Length: 249
Image 1 (cartoon, one colour):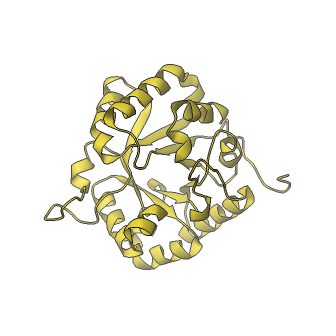
Image 2 (image 1 turned 60 degrees about the horizontal axis):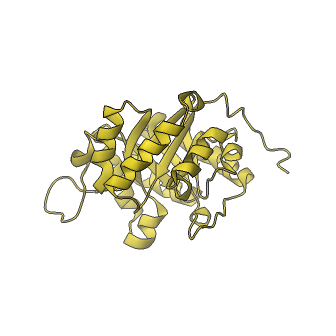
């Protein structure tokens, strides 16, 4: 079915898997999820995986504390951050408020654009603040045109792209799961766009695929030569589903 598509041995390469819980889970539900996953998951099964949990902001502190106190093999990220520094910005969560709790933050997600009218300039402003405060941006890219816009607006992207200075996520909005349905992009197209993103940046970078990743397709997407892991939404909410995904890849 995937004739001509170059795959790598995903069980041998290191993977980065980001769980984006979106607007789901209370503190208590988040801790229950962590207990369930950590009790059922064999550490040998994730020896080649870095796992970043991105809870809602109300649970970041509790999740961070639980991971530290129980020495769990997870890291913590935020789902978003303000484009502003401290000040009179009612309702905003600033970089300085999360920097002791998170090493990563998702920015530029298409849901932020769709529901909150975020612009490319907003995303670049967030990237600059995160990098200034030594938090790695997890930068979502809907398509190559959007990446071009980022590169035109912010030299900061090129300057900090290599390694995990910035984690790039290719996530076409049409592939984002919802209502229980999964409709991922064709793996060949995902791999080709990952190549284009790397070429545009011009250095070795970390690229994840996002959009309808689930236990049935994760191994295929993560085995693609130019994909280093995934941004997992819906399939990360249920602990059993997430455990199955990790075990299969």
